[in-house]
Length: 136
Image (cartoon, rainbow, N blue to C red; front, side, top):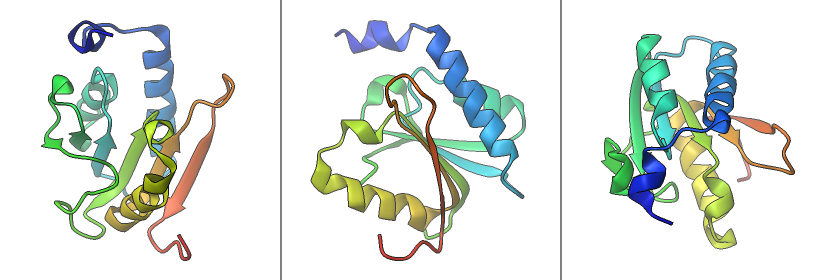
């Protein structure tokens, strides 16, 4: 697949995912600073900045022009609880299993709230992790 071409495309699913992210973020208390892991075409980034959130992006692919280039399983560049919320949409399903636990620990370490979205048989699924999650 041509990543440059894909990066320029928007589909209905992009708008639906952005809606869920914004809706779910509103249910979190006192959120101002948000990290979006895997911002894709950037629709969520634009919407959240428009709604006055301070948004930082992280992606493994510089095609999407993230603020930080890196992987979800190694976010050493961020401090503990640096973000009020971390949004990770349609990212974790691309990881090999050994990286999943590390990624979840990193997300929980850097954010007070975590909004994680995975494609599961065409249904909307969300998980919320608190920063004090034990046993991951």
